[in-house]
Image (cartoon, rainbow, N blue to C red; front, side, top):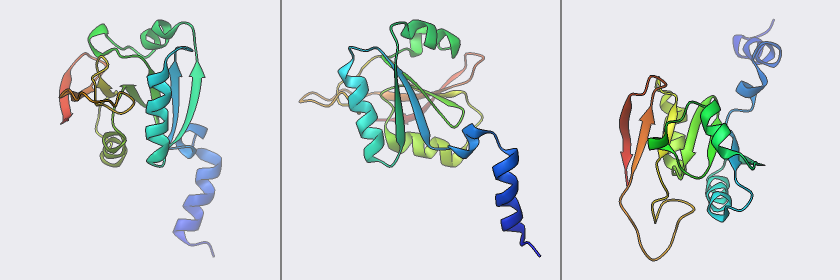
Length: 144
């Protein structure tokens, strides 16, 4: 007789979509000439995420396809477990997002604030991580 957890695991192999099985894998779209995007990807890898970097010469189309407004825009756009991650969002905020699973489209760090992951240097600017819903509502998710 199969235990409930074994049955659930077997069902997951056949029923759940591939994206759900690969939870935690980040697919990041970036411009071919952006070094800070790759630095953000390394930050995420150092915190246990698998990151696939997708190079594109039309990052604006990626942002448009994900419904991102100009006020949320940064240099790279990523997707993890169905959530959009725009810009230099710290790994701890992405982990919190995935643990809490709020009803949001994703998180964004608009612009490219100095001191955010991938933008390290001698100057550190305060910045907010913004949770956004596809209807345009914004809420501060964390302050750094």
